[in-house]
Length: 130
Picture: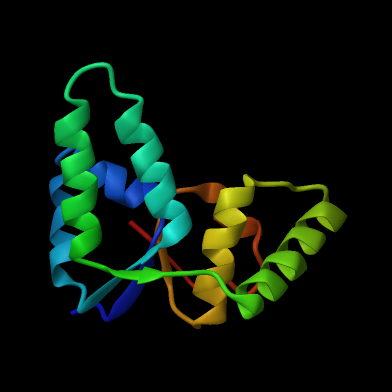
């Protein structure tokens, strides 16, 4: 059984789209940690739906209630700065929100469940490719 895992937004979206493999992995994890940045991205997607907006918002809220929310703090900002600086030096930028999400995973020394290859650019990030 997987232990504690930090979730990238794409994992939750796959779950919402009824990806059976992702849903099974979410159910097997002992603790799901959702960065507040990912929650903001989920709300953004839900609020931009043309149809079923209320249902999408409710799904985001229900999912968030089943997780432990991670909020950034001073240490998160320090990790963010280190990650972004290294990526800039490599000439390999990734979206800022993903840097914040990765910073939280590194800060808490937990794996980040994701499906995005750009996370491979981040030194010291433990990953679980789902």
